[in-house]
Image 1: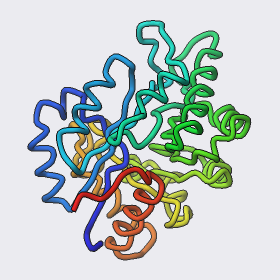
Image 2: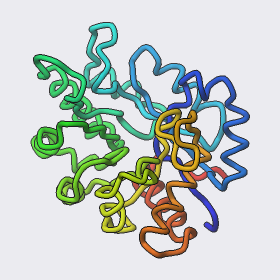
Image 3: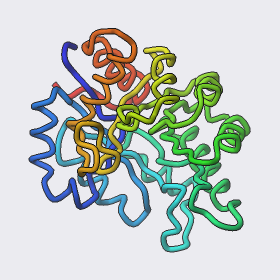
Image 4: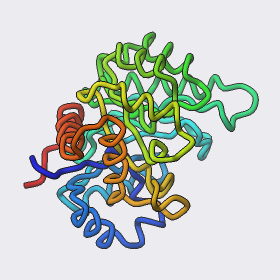
Length: 262
């Protein structure tokens, strides 16, 4: 496999990246980033996400609605998500989960939506991309109640404690690290990155957000997932190539509907 990296979570339909997809792809290639998964956040933008994934053989996408999105007030049904995922370019369901950080008042709609996504993932046999913020306990509880482990998946842009990582891994989930792991003040997260077994680890950018050091504050891009892998290699005292190879193997094992582009 050599020097191969996968950005397991980016947003190529967002204007910062969509305006220059050929440039995004060429900078990926320059940095040994051979594949990327672009993530759906709303029903309205899913066609643009699917088009971005369709624009190159080394891109795939997910189907789903972000827990923060109030959108047009219409909720996707299990059947609708299953239909969206019935496409060779769609290799995952999400991003889904719970985010209580910005939400006021009743959050039951978020839990209902999360359950719907887990059910769709189990039906399609495609893994879940889970976002959790200020909601770890409920996230893990709903995963258990709905049998999320049967679909498998990833806790994306992980920022929780080691205990939460362990509980997610007990359900068969992977842990994905973003550029946050390169931030100086992310001491607890760096410790989690030292401890997560290499066969359960993914790397991501969440671009255009969360640019890693040394690009912090700029608009992020998939090529910069390299800095995430380099930081994890440094933290663990292992070669960069090992992190690249293992996280790439994990990606294709987890997202088994994605086939490496030759």
